[in-house]
Amino acid sequence: MKNVFIFNHPLINHKIAILRDKNTGMKEFRELIEEITTIMTYESMRDVPLVPVQVETPLEVTTQYRVPEESIAIVPILRAGLGMVNGVHRVFPTARVGHIGMYRDEETLQPREYYCKLPEGIEDKMVLLVDPMLATGGSACDALAALKKRGCKNIKLMSIIAAPDGIEKVSREHPDVSVYVATEDRCLNENGYILPGLGDAGDRLFGTK
Ligand code: PRP
Ligand code: URA
Image 1 (tube, rainbow, N blue to C red):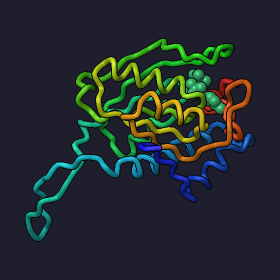
Image 2 (tube, rainbow, N blue to C red; image 1 turned 120 degrees about the vertical axis):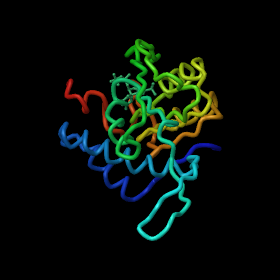
Image 3 (cartoon, rainbow, N blue to C red; image 1 turned 45 degrees about the horizontal axis):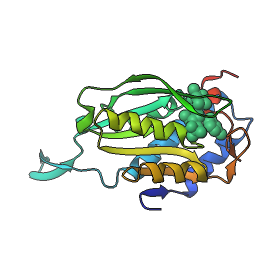
Image 4 (cartoon, rainbow, N blue to C red; image 1 turned 90 degrees about the vertical axis):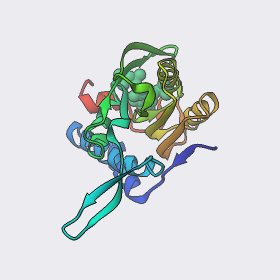
């Protein structure tokens, strides 16, 4: 699928193996999500626009290229996306952060938006929408629609584990959005959980179960 990048990087997969383990505790889980996100951010920014800057080295003045950090915004889908924000901030420490709150109705699996607060001028920024889990794709598609409704035109979606259904739905409904996924899992179970997956990312990040 065009615009879908599945990393399958050995070092990321190594970390995901630990993440999946049900015996991995909350602290290590949170740290791994952050580390994996940092690596994924480097990979997903290969096409980031750079601006020329004059730099004076101890020897001479040279033209170099930098990312204008003010042009980047991070938008986590609450709650689990929050776990990825620090991972992106390690790369772009001054990127502004917007929040979109979504939860899946446990019976219908339909996402419900309950919160949206975005940085001023977000319509002109490159938006990195983050959520570790892309299952049915409902939450990501609604979050993308919410961002587009507010004028965002340049959006990347970054998820750590994705089901084939979620990847397919996002690329069908939002073909203009580049989707970066660390690994694609087998399928969803009858409750919409990814198999083999890692369980409920929000609960494991915040210790709510
Ligand atoms: C999880 C996850 C995604 C969503 C993915 O959130 O973080 O946002 O499910 O599922 P989907 O692709 O089928 O929409 P959840 O609704 O469990 O809320 P939480 O982050 O508050 O736990
Ligand atoms: N949300 C999660 O946190 N995990 C899944 O497997 C599916 C949706």
